[in-house]
Length: 251
Image 1 (tube, rainbow, N blue to C red):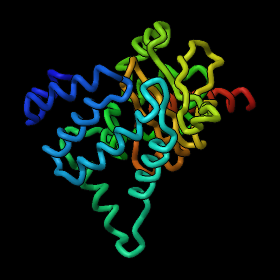
Image 2: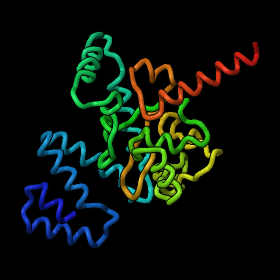
Image 3: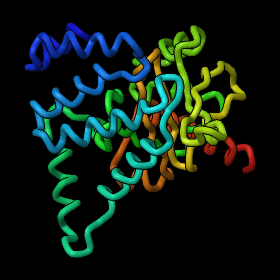
Image 4: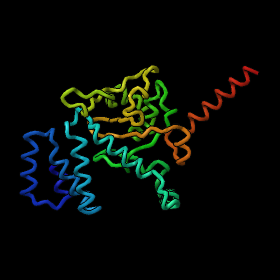
């Protein structure tokens, strides 16, 4: 963190040294990470956005890295739902924004909502269809969330105990909003839908800090928004083949 602060911020060296001394006293507070997030966002987007990013980062890690903040998750989900809600006074505004997003070079259909979670924000939430959440499908979901580049890599990540998911309603009586992480287990019976938080969010992690929130919607909503993800077309093709074979057998 000290190297990153020196490379990516204009903070005086003395201030960085003082900050790192405070960081070493209790690394779970992530003081240096909070400052780095704030300084980098301020350089790119201004002071107001930096303040929001700093608050989100502190909220996300307010209980340490061993848990995940339910409040931060709900704030992020509420933000993206509000952003996607149509404006009745300006009916064409969202349509124009959608066209602009699709025409942006170098961005995939779901890229506007993907990425790792250095600070929670609506731009970094991946949307996935609920029908993809089948028993034994965690390897596909890790790929769709951008946490693995292939199914084989996802399988290795799971086998090595490097893939995690947040457990719903797992906070203690003292800190009910500090949700616990658990290792994703291998096996065809492991059902991702059992880990949905508030029925519409799946929170995944690769390694120590690469976090991804997945917004889960119906298949109809997913396709109505013009989205796609890793394995989606393959899944639909396989389902269609199975339905076709079933019809042939009944006939």
